[in-house]
Amino acid sequence: MGKKREERAEYSAIVDRKPVKLPGGARLGVWFIINVERWDINATMARAVLPTPQGVTVIPDIPNYSWFQYGLRVGFWRLKKVLDKHGVRATVSLNAPVCIHYPEMVRAMLRSNWEILAHGYEQRAINLEKDERDVIRRTIQTIRDFTGKAPRGWMGPGLNETFDTPDILAEEGIEYVADWVNDDQPNPLNVKSGRLIAVPYTVELNDIPMYLAQHHSSPEIYERSRDAFDTLYEEGAESSRIMGIAVHPYISGAAHRIKYIDKIFEYMKKHEGVLFMTGEEILDWYNDVVAKKAEKP
Image (cartoon, rainbow, N blue to C red; front, side, top):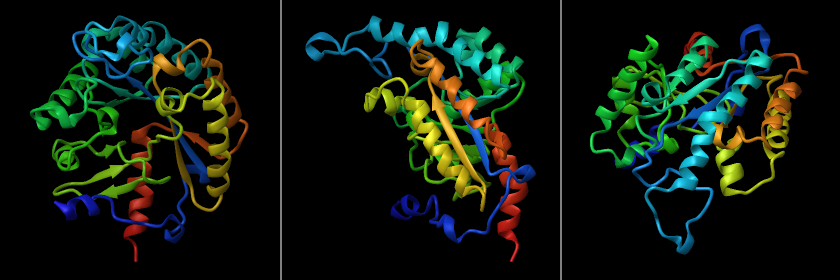
């Protein structure tokens, strides 16, 4: 077990790698991930913005459940309006039952040609599931049944995995995973059979730690994304980088934050050599260019 823990992602110093370039010689590939989830009103909420008096856990938790629901009813549509305005296709990290309970949302994603990334069945850590493989299979099948296409990528709720998750994902046909925030370029994970690539996700440019844990003011997502962009754009002149921005409709879709999402795209679009990509487009680039280059002597 110790060996598996240490060697799932083998160490690779980015300064020692052969330079790689995105299509057209672009410096930076940016993928924008919207996490669209389903919370169960009959259970403890996945997250909370308002603590309960006396610190007790209550069910139903109306203020926190309705705060989350605001994201589905209003916040998501604000985010979609901004992305459509800028012609950016999102990657949607989707709890599979959203297809059943909020089908109009998924249809809107498909009309804009967004990518659907599997995000588990319920918004619950995979470590709590009795049958991990069954959850993964039901997630893939539910999304395939609704969209007509099996998801190529996976993100565990809360980015959580067991020690067996990558092996199971590869066996079930998943090609990339977004749980590993260990790099600015895609990198392979060691699995028992098949192949699984880690596409760089983020906890730094992510509205949950930014606003719910660190309690920053509304402009933080713009300021932090701008500063990260500047660094990665400069580094990308030598070897292309990948930058992820991760949001949730009930957080970044709030009225006092949405203009800063708009400002992020306005800023990045002023620069040449920037590609707005989906997770599977990053994967395909990695498979076609980076992996093949690495295989050459």
